[in-house]
Length: 315
Image (cartoon, rainbow, N blue to C red; front, top):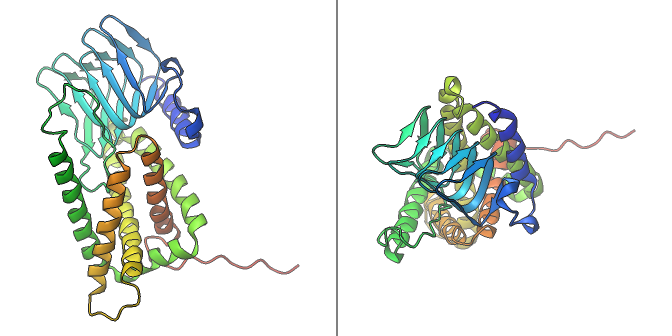
């Protein structure tokens, strides 16, 4: 892990600041956007790599000397990695011939590690059934057709939709006032919520990767991811409540507000799941949607207080 901290911070800040029009740099630059990158047998890659919505393949007898950070997309490794691997909403598969001389951290998906694969450090993962979208992509034509078929994709989307809808109903039943407060902040202060949400998400991802990949602080990283999960769920449920309220309008019905929140969350999750299949652009749009909710949660301290902008004092 030598040199990981400054390298990770540099590339994470690059991801947060980069614009879509610079997509497609060569692999030597250490950045990939919606591309496929293969390290063939016998080849050696030196340097860190961050891949956004990309497919990375390391063939057997290849050597990757550096850290790998994935946001969406997938990584299939049958070779050697002298560094850490961190995944955010990305599919990670380590073949039986793979070796990782570092730590592995995944949020949003559990890595597939075949028998015989070697990881010298720790392996930490936070499952992604709670994610309101799917960022993992697999463009390998030799992949299991059953898992990549339309039926499987529809099943995953429906499961995610019903799961998050049920979560929104429970959140609204137990915490109706905080949910309404977060939704009110999203509507009244959208620009501030967006900016704070983007900053909070960038900081959360950076801290998760840095803490989880540091063996002695890995429990702190997992605890931080749990707090982030609660914030994301509250923000997503608040967005769902606002959408459901607008869908039902002012119709005089006896529908319970929690059901309205669940219905709106189902519609929101279904739309986000569809956007997740659009390369790169879908990732940006979903990130912006999550930022509105997360920013409002931060501004209201998890819905515990109203966010107010104090008027300027007269000179």
